[in-house]
Length: 470
Image (cartoon, rainbow, N blue to C red; front, side, top):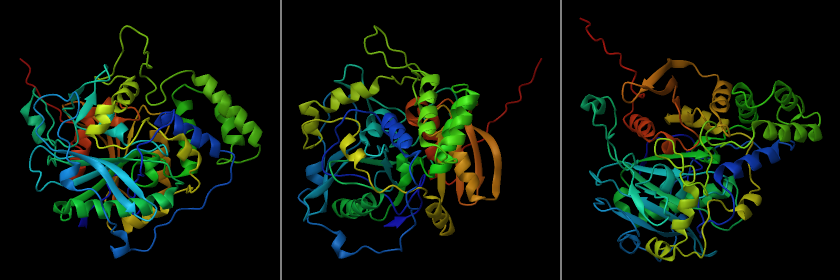
């Protein structure tokens, strides 16, 4: 298998998962928010560094009960008509002695499935389910608000072409339109951390490829969001800059006062660490000042389940987590997914509280990857306040990289879709009007972004049409 690039971050810490689909009571943003605040007054953890290269060893290949044929999903309950691609899900054993296995969900592409690359997606938390990405972001289906039926996601990442109808020329401005393979997996109950995640994840990938040997020769890409920045995704990559960027984002977007911003800079550990009690005071003040807003998207409506109508942004319902939970907790859905669970929820709080191995920064790994020619993209929705665009920019600035292509706007349909700057081996992309779950809020722009990456080109520039005036 040829590993070509990391779509957003970390190659050596690749997969994530454990035996049971997760359960708990929280969402990805809340878990990460609590996780971050809990570390503000603590001493930093060791820096994560890239381990020595290793080849596939015989110990990594584990005895398996499952098979590709047995894992094939005949149909998901409530799925729309006309599904033209294969779905698979099941468990891959990563430690037969400990009886530990990882759950995965895999959607093939509708076309060219014999030659297309494989894209692996992670959600974060830590200890949150990647079925968030499958059902609310970039997967082939979205759960409808009845919690019982599915609709087709026209901008799913196992598609490769943007379904624009207004101007066929737009399609030709999107490079890398090959169809994608996306597979997802979930966390279960175990003592977890960054290093153990890497070990189990590596074994998972090796054994999954034994089950699906036709993908061993494909190009492989990794993608993700949130705390998945510690193993692959956009998001939490360096404690000091991430904290600084987070609270500076709240201040610059008029969500926190001057006094609160100054207090956090003065008293919190990752800034100066002069008074942990004062730090906690100003962190709490920050919460009160910003009020009850959607941290995922500071301008989005909040979920109102009891309302007669639900507001949405670009078709994304802020109550989608509730609909997904209802759907995935149905017995017929779990049977169709070959899932061995009694309950499912977005995040596993027990695992999150036991996440003891937490690196302070993974910037040394990013440097190592770039030095070895691995192509990395970091992306941010510009309305996310949990791991905001400012945090990513501060972290990149610490790398002191020379600029290859200056900051410029990019577009999908003669409209600014975001901004991009290219460094040597690293590219930073913002997605305009997107919150934390970028493919949820801006699905067309997210698909344009990933298509550009796979095509080996920057997102397309904004084209200015000159119209003759009479």
